[in-house]
Image (cartoon, rainbow, N blue to C red; front, side):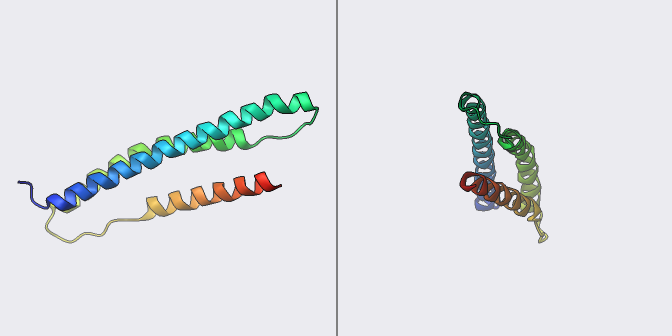
Length: 116
């Protein structure tokens, strides 16, 4: 039996949660991108000219989700190595904090864009 089995299983669950989050961000970026394409075709028929930054946001979310996949794999291997070491180690939390800040900023921007 593998030593520290519970810790390794928790690490795998965390890795899978990161992958689910990455896929969800990619899917949300795709939805934002397609909605902006829908608006692009809808607006000319109404005769209204608007600038649509949602295309850049959708692409950015797709790229963010894609970049989170190798980052999550890297975190998985780092934590696996730390679990196997006997010495206590401190893990960094900057990836989670950076992701939370970026997603909160995008959410606030989209909320303001929908209202205004």
